Length: 302
Length: 288
Image 1 (cartoon, one colour):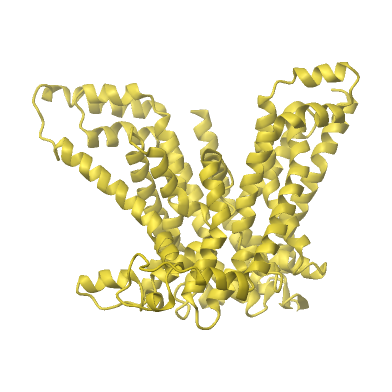
Image 2 (image 1 turned 180 degrees about the vertical axis):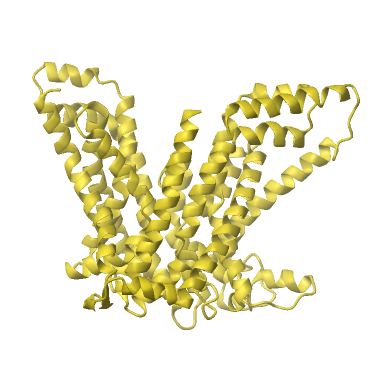
């Protein structure tokens, strides 16, 4: 809608039609106090809706078996027990899956930063032929959904005998996150003044050295933010890991198989879910602002 | 432009570009290549030309899947836009603990989809869920949501929206915060009621971001696979078998990867069209 239309509607709505009523106290739908109460009720409703499934999961994971099977269920555990967590840690495959996830996450963070940081630096500092095309190509990958390349990736990975390896997950996740991290690093470098590197170049420093010795040490926060976003993505990714692995399961895949197995033990499963949530929730509450930006930036890779 | 600069810049960008192109663009092309073969898992059994696509047109389960995807996408987008805008309006004021409220509301969007789906599966458990206590207190019988075709669809919609609506909310909240205070104040001085201001002033000003988030939401829901897969697995029967779930089942349960590749191509084309629309809208927005 063009801006002119808005102004028109705006002017007509508030000026012409409403002016004659001025001075007449119009009846309000609700008194201010009631309005406030209604507003808070709605907000509270949204907060409860968001938190309840997670709190219920947490509560279940802390209940002894007989309380989990009790009906009507109690919201809060009467007696807190850690037995399910202990079971997950000692009697299940979850510790192994955590290890897989940690390795894949760490490797992906490392490789993504290694690839995207110099590229982001070059895109921020240099004007070169093909730059716009390159940036466009990289960004347009955001529009390719995971569902579409699931099948071809599976076939390619099986041709290359890469199924069920760390390498395939790390490569795919890296490719998936590089465009976003490149973008973050680019805007980060753009915010750092270029004078210091120029001075270094004048002093006889090579371009690589200027980047490595001068710009990189200043870009720590940008890399940290990128690392956090990659961490959350890799840690929570499911469908690619499910497709590309069979024995080498990550945490999310482990949870899924646990759930689809026979006779779900909800105590254990909820404990495992809570354990898997921990790293992500910590990262989220520490870096909330970055998250909001990053989530909207990489939103399509669902 | 010095030659050295060009080389340096290209060397910096080269590896990143190579990885991205090889692992995201190449597979898309590969999917098109694969879609003309009949396969048994990764083993190619024969060339069928456009056979897979012709088969798609006669595959009633797949056509039903398209219909189900449309229903799913339409209801989910409508709900998450309404909820997202509503919450954005509520949060666009000076509230105590605003940061905390926003963090809690956004939390479902951050946690793993699998974890969210498992939490909901437990919450929808017919025997032991507190929801059943609620149902009983309303005098209704216990309900096994996930084994009833329509309720199962409602469940995957509800859980998907529950997890995703913070996304339009954040976008719209940012748009609302960008409106100068004076605009609203002027309307208020003129005596416009809250609803009047909302309809005639505020909403038209965030129309662009709203369109953007509606298109992005459409893509997001259209490609959704994890929540339905974990919550219902496409069932009961194939009541919640969206296009994406059909693709997954065909590929990895039945081993018809060529046929599934044809579905992938179709899904890719839908994405492409909607994305082009998105870029158009975005450009129109920037031009304003």
